[in-house]
Image 1 (cartoon, rainbow, N blue to C red):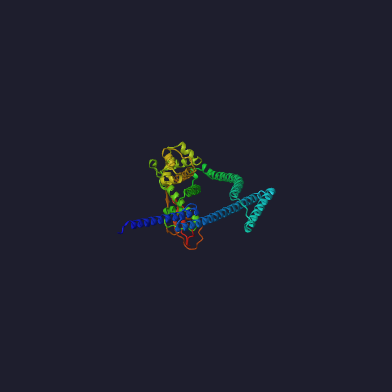
Image 2: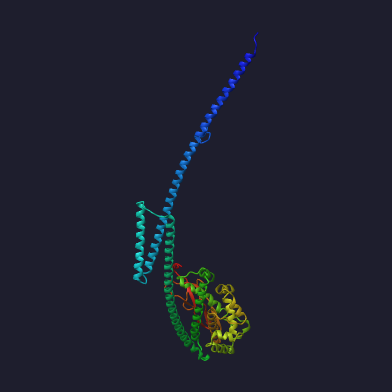
Length: 460
């Protein structure tokens, strides 16, 4: 009878052999892996990991090369910057040396000229050497040191240029000071000469007026009135010139002012425009001339022999007095009232504020004071002459009147006198009255008029 034990034993032996084979295989594989680990410095690499290592080594190699290339480019850039800095510093030094060379020309300084010339030559040689080294690629520059030295050279050149500029400005200022002193001396001489002429003119005017001091009422005639009228017109024109200068200083638009005084007027010459202002002043000052009280309500006087003598005595009394002094000493006199009223009428508040920046003169006049200005002094002198002309007119004891000529009227030598020469053959017409005419009894004193130009007006 067969038994199963041997089979079982065989199977057990087979299983043991199989297990032993598997164990042996594992040992062999383990030893193989250990040998590979040893060959790779103890690191176990797969096939894909080896490729990554190779790429990494390649990257590190190229990065090292790129870094060296960047360092090379940076050094080249630094060298070029140092080269340009040195070049510009040399140019600045040349400019400073050239400025010094110019400065030494006036006044002439031979030693300074030679030094400046040598400086220019030295800098040009240095730049030429720098160019040669650059073209032959023989530049041996330490960028940092070169930049610092170039900056120092640049600042030294600029300082030298500034010093030369300061010396030049000081020299020019000295010359200007000399010129100013010379011009001041010339101005003083001119002022002195003008004062001497003014004194001569005043002396001649005083001599001319002195004839009226000895005038007697019995010999008074219209010729005396005409002579004194000329003195009055001179004072009016003197004030007008001063007024126009003040307007120009205050930046007035004179053309607009002229159009306001005499609309649609045309002037043959630009200089003739002053007649419009003279017309305005003379008409304002002579307004009320035909009344014995000259427009002052509180000074009403009858016209008779007594008033004739009274006017003549006023004329003789005031003919030689100073107008401003008389106003200050006699604030309640008729002349003071007349002057105050005419000033407020002629010089509008807006006009005074525009000319002088304030209203101090009219405020002072309104309180009985006398302004201390050249403008008012000229006005007071004109006012005195007009007042005396009025006194002289009523000294004749006859009817007194003034007249004006209408615009467009035909010119008549009997009643009119042109303020400009009239050489035109055609019959001229009146543009406007500059100074009104006078009638004393049957005597006519011509008015002064500006005639309309026949030809086209001159360009303004």
